[in-house]
Length: 208
Image (cartoon, rainbow, N blue to C red; front, side, top):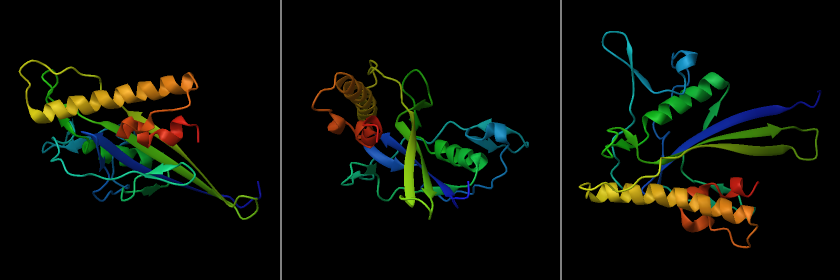
């Protein structure tokens, strides 16, 4: 188009576990890892026989304070300290997804021994730079959200961490439903702050 446009794509990947935010890309990532394209985005590990096995995610985390949420003056929401990876193509983006997925917290919920115990947000940020338009830098982001399924505390599962997980999972789902309902009804107050999930999705739900 002759406008000398420069596009850059960045990715972050976080999970919300027990109402705490964790960086799934905290470990270094080699986006040139030779994983077949059809398997990018899936978590595989090579076996001794030369085959591959599908990874089941990471074990339960030791709880700490996690990362915090920051809201800018324009209403945009970010997580300071979370890893941001620049990618050049779809293969690199899927490799980041694959590596991050391997860090998702899993555990036994009494039905599934490797049940996902967290909500996760895979965020793609696109920047467009141009020296020939009124706005030299324009940015947008797209959130891909993987929600853990709603659960009930099963009889005999009186482990405190399981109770925290179930409470957090259901809180996020309930709060998301409440926010969507409030937006549809055009209410004056939208309860974004009721959970970390809705807080992180606040600007997206607002249509920013």
